[in-house]
Length: 128
Image (cartoon, rainbow, N blue to C red; front, side):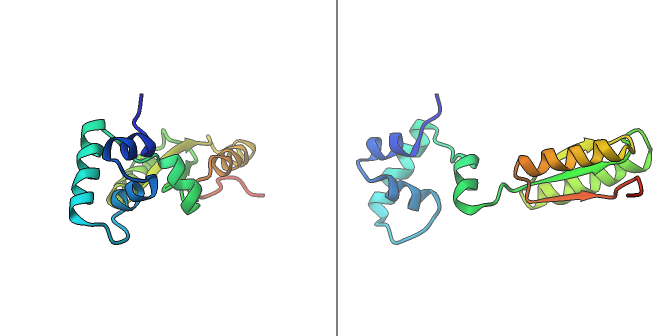
């Protein structure tokens, strides 16, 4: 089971807000408290929830890449460039293949939107 902010707060003897401030390096926290919270984070293996953070920030740090035909030798190079640039910015990428079908591209775009991606890179391969 994954440790929560509450678990860390209980272990460190501080409030959930204090744990959040330490985890996000915000606010003024005494060095003693910061060390105690960081020790609890390490001991419990706490990792911030990207889902919870996305609810607060309204950002998922995820983008979608819709390729027209992934078997076309051009597209793996495009994908590699996007993936490398995204990794450098600590972003995740959903890579999707539309096979050049407009309806599939539109369904994929809808799905990416429903998953809350922050943006989409595509070139519709069919004329509207």
